[in-house]
Image (cartoon, rainbow, N blue to C red; front, side):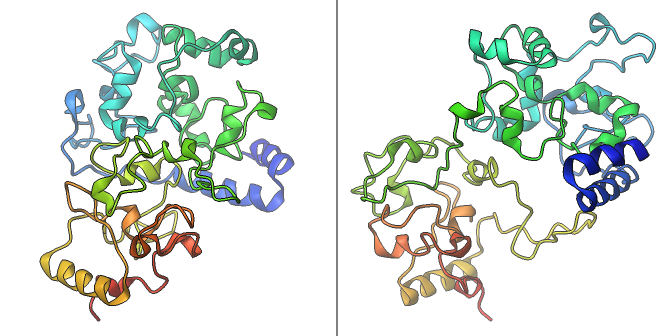
Length: 333
C-alpha cells in the first residue's frame, strides 16, 4: 500500500493521493449489496454463501456464475476451462448493460480497428481485440477478468470501472491509448449552433434521428430520437450522476434519494400543467411512457435552437435548468 501511495503522489499530488488511498481502502470493506431485482437471462443464480441474487457481479468474489457456466477452478484458469454462457462477449455484457452500450458515441463496439489504430494499440488492448474476433468488444477497454482476481481488489477504489491499464484521470485518456490525441476533439453535443446562428447538425444527430422536423416541431412528440424507451440513458452516457434532487452525494451512504424518473401521479400532473401555463414554460415528459426524464428539468439545447418560446426556456442557463426555482412547478408547497 505504501508503494501505491508514492506512485499516486508522484502522478496526482499529495492531497489527491491521500483521498484516493482512503477511498480505495474503504471500498474494500464494503459488502456487496443484495439485489431485489429479477436478473436477466442466465443471471438467475444465487451465491454460494448467502443464497441471494447478485445485481452487480463485478468485484464480487462469489458471483462467477453471472458470466460462467460453472465456477472456474483457481488452479486451472486456462481459457478452455473458463466456460462462458455465450462466446459473444458483447451479448454477455449487454444482458445487463444494454441501455448503456446502445449509445455508440460513448461505447463504440463491433468495428474492426484500422491498420493505423492497430499500430498505436498497446499489447493488452491488441490481445483483447484478438480475443473478440478481431473487432472491438466490451473487453477491449474494460479489463473484466481484473474484477475476478482477489489480488486486484485494491484497485477497485481507483479504477471501479476496470478500464484496461487504468486508472485514468479522464475517460478520454483511455481513448488516446489507441487514438492520436492531436487528431481528435471530444464532441460536445450541447454545442449546437455557431456564433453566426448556423445549426450544427452533427451534434443534433447524437440524440436525434435528423433535424428535418426541428422547424415545424411544436412539442417533444414531434421529434424523433436515436433512442427507444428510456431517454435519460442518453444523458447518462456522458453524465453518470446519482439520483437528484434530494439524493445523497456521499461515496459511502446507502441512501439513494427519491426517484423522479417515473410517471407523475395525477395531482402532480395537474399542478404541473397549471404552473406551465402561469410561467409560460414547458416541462416535457418522455413520449410514450409519460415519465419524467432528464430533459424534463434540464434543457439540453443551446440558446437559439428551439423556436418555441416556452420550450426554449433554460437554454444555456445554470445547470441548464428550465427554471432556477424549479421544484414548485410540480410540487405544491
